[in-house]
Image 1 (cartoon, helix red, strand yellow):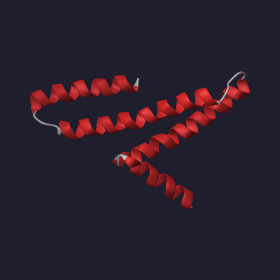
Image 2 (image 1 turned 90 degrees about the vertical axis):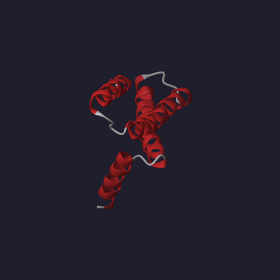
Image 3 (image 1 turned 30 degrees about the vertical axis):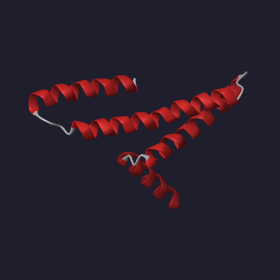
Length: 101
């Protein structure tokens, strides 16, 4: 669903820019590529967790799900921070501010 939303946004931006002028499509494309790279880290983590943790019963599947979600979040924000995604840095700053309290 996220990919469909990105694709829809991309098509709408191209159509809008043809009729009304530039919307800094280069910057938006760079942002899109960075978001896709950060999202790809989620896929990688989920694939590793699926192979490493056996999931034969409900308890093991639940544990694998929690581990996958936790490490996916860490991986996503780690890659987003390395790519200097402004939105991810904002969320990380808010989160670290909450932890300091």
